[in-house]
Length: 186
Image (cartoon, rainbow, N blue to C red; front, side, top):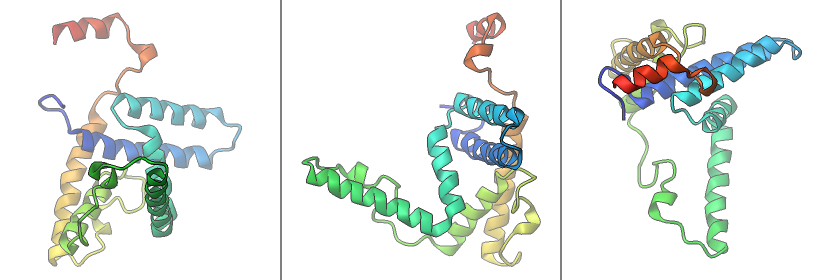
C-alpha cells in the first residue's frame, strides 16, 4: 500500500520497466567486456527490485514484447498446456489459477480502451525510447481513440515524471544509520 503523495505500485512498475529496457539496451550496445554497462544494469535491477518490481517477471515481459504477438501467443499456449499437464498429474487448478492473466471470460478489448492502454504504456517510456513522444500517437488526434490515447499518455507521463524524480531507494548494502533514524520518525 502506498503512502500519501507516493505513486501507485503500477506507476512505479511501469517506469521501472522502462528503466530496465533502457539499461538492457545500453548494456547490449556496449562491448561485452565493458563492465560499466553491466554494473549499471545490475544496479537498475537492484533499484527496481527495491521498489517492488519482480525483476524475473519484468525480464520475461520485456522479452515477450520484443518477440511480438507470436512470442506472447507461444507463452500463453505454454502456460495453458502446463495447466492441462498439472491436471494430468492429479492437481485441479482453481478458477483463480485459470485466470492467471486476468483474461478468463473477457472478450476483446474495446478500441478506445485499447488506445488508453497503448497511450499509458507510451507515457511511461523513457524519452530516449521510440514511441515515447506525444506526437507518436498512432490514432487521428481528433478521434475518440486519439483522445483516449493522448489523455492516457499525459496521465502516465505525469506519473512517470513523479516516479523518476524520486530519490533512488537505498539497497540493502547502502542502508545505514541515517535511514534507520528516519524510519524511526515515521
